[in-house]
Length: 200
Ligand SMILES: CC(C)(COP(=O)(O)OP(=O)(O)OC[C@H]1O[C@@H](n2cnc3c(N)ncnc32)[C@H](O)[C@@H]1OP(=O)(O)O)[C@@H](O)C(=O)NCCC(=O)NCCS
Image (cartoon, rainbow, N blue to C red; front, side, top):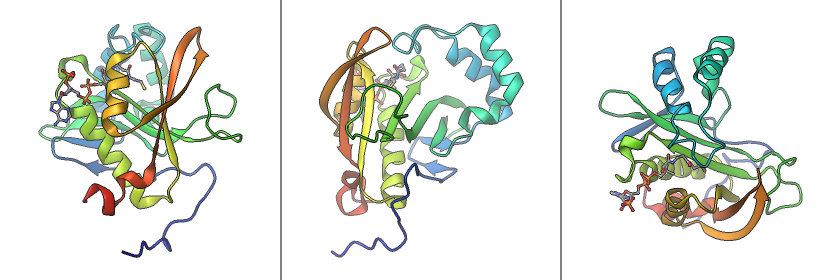
């Protein structure tokens, strides 16, 4: 089948601009004031933050939210909260944004690769919900953007995150040090989530 690309243009720095993505059990949407308490609990959770630099101080998170507003948590294009489709409750975060060239860990000289990141509340780990949310985001991106590599960077010790990347079809291509610990960089081509492949 001929792939139509007239509606997609390679724009440096671009990511998906969709504001809402629906999947079977979860919705990717922008953050709202009603998410504030759940976001504070999430960012101060030692399990969520175990491989992300540690739990943040409650007062710091609250001050940040007060300073910039809850909506700023997902203010960037490609940044979402994961919410329950049943009652819209906050379940976690998911983003497909550009990895800054100043950071270590790249597969191209110019950096700025599309990078997928995810967090889910621990009570819901082990049910495939992060997988479902990530698949929905990558399919939406494959509809909006030209094909390019997408990366996941995760601590090599983060077993659940490594398993999720593998389950999504990513391949580990290199390891490097950031924040004093080994990170693994995973890659998949966005076209793997296109309609012809993903069956959407
Ligand atoms: C990384 C993280 C999002 C993974 O969450 P998760 O729930 O383990 O991930 P998945 O959605 O892929 O779920 C996989 C589990 O659900 C099970 N599952 C059930 N139904 C499933 C389905 N339909 N599809 C896929 N998996 C399913 C799998 O068998 C697997 O079970 P297991 O944990 O017993 O092996 C979560 O551990 C987390 O938030 N960690 C803290 C934040 C973090 O470190 N993020 C990484 C930064 S890049």
